[in-house]
Image 1 (cartoon, rainbow, N blue to C red):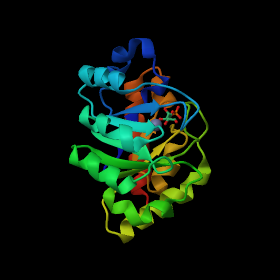
Image 2: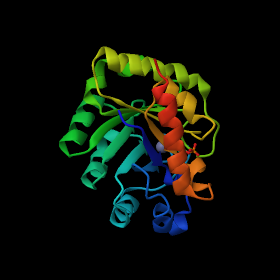
Image 3: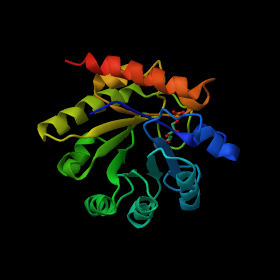
Image 4: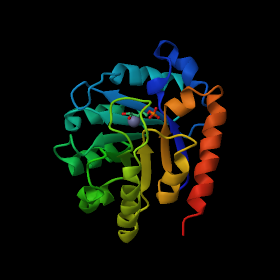
Length: 223
Ligand code: DX5
Ligand code: ZN
């Protein structure tokens, strides 16, 4: 799978979102964090804002739903034109049905796992998904420290996907920076969400390129 960098707008300036998005033209996708104050202790944005973002950028939208009852709410984000929709295993009632619904609506289906959730939990249903998002912080806020305890999970997930001969994207989200991206890529991650590292950089687009290059070099070092 190619290396992809998806800047998270969570730590961008929400009062001038269109300008902020225009600062990362080299991004492979734009990561949009939807939080409902129930699944996580933070509240961000919902469908109307996603529709507005869709109107102001050509970048594919990578939706990350940190919400309860994704079975009910996730399809609308696919209908709004999201390229991929990630819902959390911990919140879903019927993940297989929801994944199929998202694909039917034209989006890539992705499932998110919190740090404490074992990757083996998605083993039997991996073939239903285009991507698995492994949280490398507890979800809810940007700017937290990368959890190295997730590195063995990245390796285990890669092994699971390889055993099933699946072309699965492995995304990590939380604390991704020039300091942490190499070890995640070396473990087998190929899709990287970066909020603070990109939007707090002096030149966000240069940071996107630097992260991509660092990940690409480390990924190639894999045996
Ligand atoms: C956290 C969000 C992340 C967040 C990452 O729950 O899912 O996407 O924006 O931010 P950084 O890169 O600052 O850890
Ligand atoms: Zn996210």
